[in-house]
Image (tube, rainbow, N blue to C red; front, top):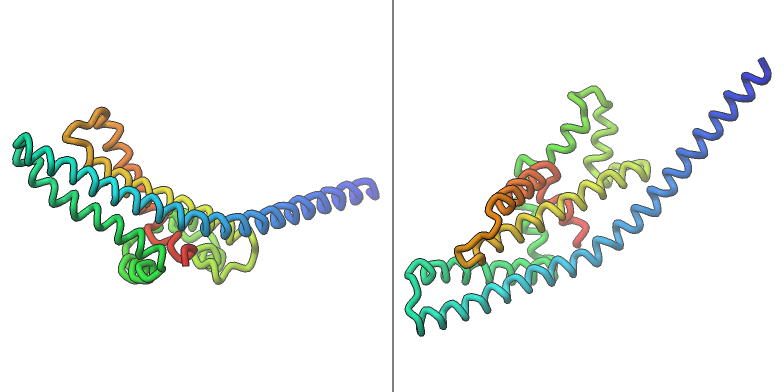
Length: 208
């Protein structure tokens, strides 16, 4: 009997040590995630501004071709869309860099019916709503692993949003020739599904 009790206590201690180790790992991951988002903000801004500049430079080349070679009118009509998209990407990049656009995007996009991942985590209401709320709202989190889950969802949100932006840019700047249309459509649909699943504003507060 004493041996049995000793084994049970031993297993309990091992379980406590494992859980404690996981919580400590989550603390380190949370610190990493915060630092990661700081760098990610400037990388994201650089990507947006670069895309905008490349779009405008491409537009300039197309405009010169239209003037010299009299290309199709369809290409001439697309230049207005490319002009709009180019300046939009530059505006987004500068707005996120100086934070003013982040507040606006959160205010405008927050009501969207997204972040379905939190509904799936709830398992049809079988999990205590308090636990789900602590995962949905990082400010209400009590334990490191709850914050870690939110950070993972925020990273997935960023990847989906970036993928969507790049997909739209590629479709507009493909010179009317898509080498792998099926892959492009699948990538676009996947990015839209990701944005709906993880949210389009989930990562934005970490850019402030």
